[in-house]
Image (cartoon, rainbow, N blue to C red; front, side, top):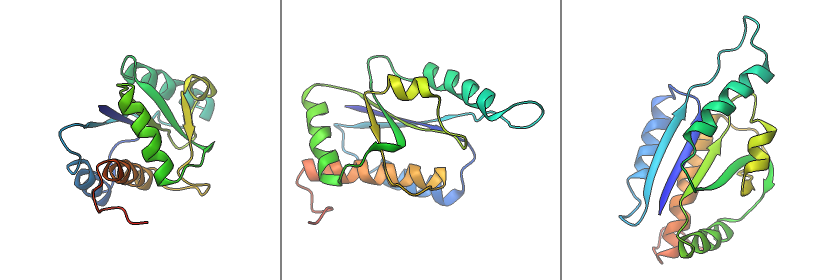
Length: 156
């Protein structure tokens, strides 16, 4: 299985890069994990939030791997437990799916991308910094995989 995480934003603080890398290297050989940073559109100078979202939308669409199951992070998405995420990942694994998770920019995501998504997923009802979302997402993906592999990382 290939998992791609598309994240609008570059130049994250070192702690974000370090934490993301730490979890990313824990995945076994069966899962390939790739982070693709998408350049955010600069605001100001006549660039409205709507124009910025549209520019980021075009970059995100170009980066989505072909035939990948698209999971878009959204505060109004499904609020799964970690075990439910693991169960869904098991289905995706059995179906031979590659996955693409999308983390939007500061002004959010285009409605068209949310409509295109196979799943809208909520990590939290709270607003979080985008770097924190990267770390939380990769940790939860690793935790879900550890559940599927009967690894003792996750405890009930």
